[in-house]
Length: 505
Image (tube, rainbow, N blue to C red; front, side, top):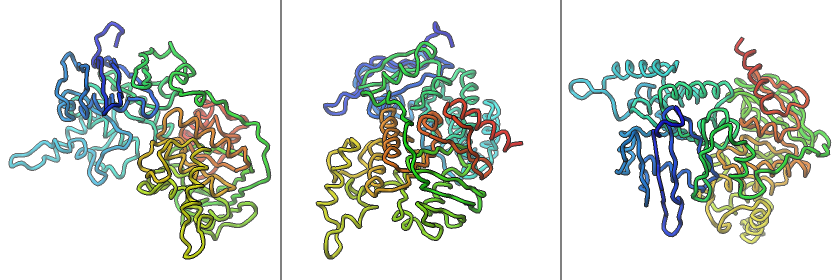
């Protein structure tokens, strides 16, 4: 790839409106062969629409798309796939019960005489394809037996098997461990050597500056850039993305810590945790670092009473909770923001007011026959709508209609309404845009400032460094206290890599 080389992909003057709402306004975007071009933008900025136009889901109102020197006129997903455009979605689209080879060639199986799928040919071609691109993966392995990173490699191989010359990657590191991120970086390097152009969509600044050659920022339907990496800084990009001052909000660690709120001794589970002991004070934010699959989420679920085989002492405010299931722990003052808000945190088809009221039904019941008071529910919703700046129509709007950031605010609101003493957070900013991330982090700091004890699990190392007063590392099922003053992202990364090496030894 050179600056003088013609673009592999050129999108010129792309405009798109939905009804009276203009979403894209004359956007120019290009990718060179062997280039990683990062595309940033908050939710609603237009980047999803731009990619859907590239993939043939939508037709542009104006503009043209040129790939490999040929104009793409027909807008359909099949024609774009045939032309060489593929996308690796954040939610992978693989069949768990089928093999790697079967997934790679799904719908395009080589056939024997008589029309039957030639499984040996699929396995042979999949193995050769993986070897050609440096993937150490068994073509006969079932998808359900693979790690998330290996499944992601299968998606990439599936794209390459179609002859893709441009691959769009949507938040590719959102579910990866530190070790898996390094493997993905190697995969991307191999794709670049093969001349593949990559559109890299991510909210993670650090990885963009590590992996991308250039970046562009979508805002209000316009594209800013491209900017060569090295000629622009992370603060400058944050200012381009920011709606206001949220993205530059400074961390505030100057909090007065209170008495010990949570005490854990000898916590263990059948598979993940071994003899975990630690304490947490009121007003303190303790971050949990570790590899995906190391037991971080299991720790939070065990504390919340969701792991049946968990054993060990758990005391909240001095009260023993070992015999209590989740409802009893909620009554004692525990709250948990789960990793998957759409499945575990919300009832998407229910109204916003109903969702906020779920952990607080005892306070919302009015008289006989113990019916929820609509007046009380509405008052509760309105108070948190204002306090958390939730963008919605009203309390009767369903949770499934909101953006990811506003959905997460509803999850926070329902637990804040319960006045907890301990807040368990599992990936609290996953899948939200840069401004929503800043708002979520501010909510966490405000909760700690009010005296809540906070236990934080996040795969975003900058978030871990930004929010945590202390950091505990999960390694081999145990918790290890991080060195004092461990706040730098790269220092945390180095410590994780060191622990990973020790586990592998």
